[in-house]
Length: 533
Image (cartoon, rainbow, N blue to C red; front, side, top):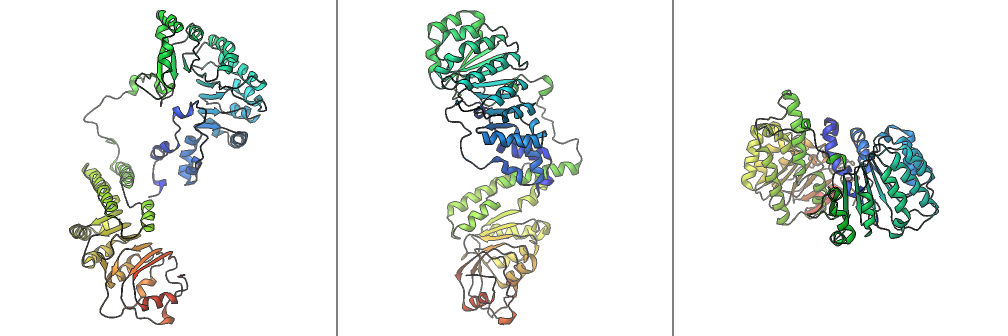
């Protein structure tokens, strides 16, 4: 199933967990930035197909973190080339000054809701673009990391600009202050407190490690518009701080005492700050947003049967794929392993098969919708299950065409039951077995495979081929034009003339392994120039 068959809303739900940056990571003020790790760029999701590009682009630009001038220049070029991209930016983290590019980024980013800034600026770093661009923004939340830098020209310029913006940003309701640096706090204290007092829209202030400064809280508590002051630290510092004389004086006032909330960054029981939700996500939902549980509610009840079937089909397909041990990624691992796999691996597959079966038991709708997806990747373990499997395919041949990957194990005399399955499995791509000596095919099964899926089959591994009473023609092998992996376990003698063997037979073969063979098979391979040893 191609992703183009899925609605954008479902693709968005699939991609959101991979592209989402948690608020806790975005607002982190650790000494080592969480964005400093090396990993494959999340932009790789945009290269899958056009539908993923369309859906993933807004998700990718939702949170932007800049850690260097080249990154800032690259973002500026992207936004200049397509200004629609700038409208997707909701959160902007700037870990430096980064020159003139910041002016254009902030000028174009009209929808920026949250800005993360650091005052720990090197003296050689330019904050001109950042300082000229900040007044053009109008965020709801400011996260200001003071760091522990000394005073220099860029630091003073950025501090003054931020303080001016705090007084002019009309939508600013939340300010997070990380006061890790003692020296920086002493430099910024008076200017920053004055700006906070002038803000008319400020509702919430979050303080991280407030430097045991009682006058700070006394001053903040007097801000008229303020509703909440969160005091957050990384350990047991809060309990020590609450016992200080300055804190007791603040709490003695009835109004000021109600402002304070206390918590730890590790999300302990006394944590009042919600780690994973932004300020906008923490507001109380309206009555229209709340839905009372209705036991008679039926999903998609008002839609047509055709639309309902398509939507549930897509949902069930991905649910089965998530619990399938034989998906393409797992298949590649299986090919790299020995065919004599451990029983532990087989047991895990049996458990996965049970989980997949449970999905079919949800309802009749799920059963009818999921049956073809259920047989797409299928494992048969045991003689009795193979008999049931053959009977079901014989009674409903359309299920055979749904099979793409089939694995057989712990079965004997397989050819007797297996040939009817091969006749109907017209879309089979991978046919594997875990224990080759237990599972065997006959020559006629090979003929059937060649006729039905010769141009589609990519994997034929783990099977022993029974030796017929007389030599046989290798013609069925010539039909496997897509075969990539082959295990040959047969003492069958082949009868052929050298000039009759196509030199381009088995053109896609990448892996060939022998368990047993005779000289006729080896001579056949010598005639195929496309097969290299």
